[in-house]
Image (cartoon, rainbow, N blue to C red; front, side, top):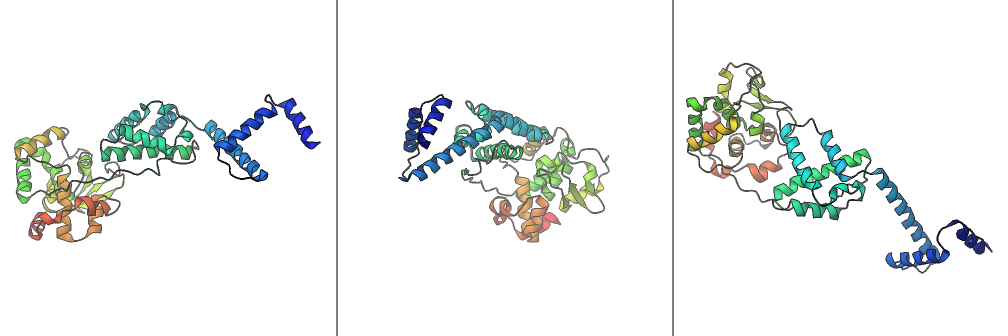
Length: 333
């Protein structure tokens, strides 16, 4: 009698027949590969699928498209440096050009979708792949904070290994050639910034953001504030060796240490110094190798270079094989 009443209620309320419902139930048991023979177990499994589906639909309704999330993520970081924002926009635009990826709800995107995106557009270089993965990861992290998705599908993806080229520090002859060229009238404006690159290990991008007010004559340090630091963390680096000459300069505090036409002059300076093969960041690597050879203090070196830990120094920066103790002592004296 109870089952007959339920049958009558279904017929009166639903736009589908009980036979249609039975077909759906059979399809569910086949698609879900239900192996339980117990009726209650099958019904409970069916209920779980229904609830999961309802929750999934509700989550999609709360979600936004990947394009919207990516644009809002960029907007949230609009206070970053112009060069950083340009880099982020470039990667984001390339992601949005991937078929219809931009229109997919953020909560529906899977790890497989992210894998295909990264390997389709960013796999030509391990460095590019890692950078793209970081940008994509940041979009989903922002989406989680905004409640647009529950998990970050990029988190489980692995990056291809990066085999770094071993950088050989500049020789004493090359260092002298650079400094000698800097003292020529044409390149004299380059000397203070070059001394910071060489004797303090300041990054090229950082040195172009430093002002003369960042040189503390009393403490004999250069302060690299958050506005100038690549990582956003401030640090103070002692002035040693040739960098001590900066204490003798008397320049307006708000004037930049590096000249505005730095890029053009720097290329010509290297050519004039007779250095044909120039490895990227070689002056920073030279500083790191000479510093460790002279002071034998990896933690101090890490702090002065502005690294979060010592791993990058151990795996990439240091090459003390080509540095003698006497060279390191003369360099910092």
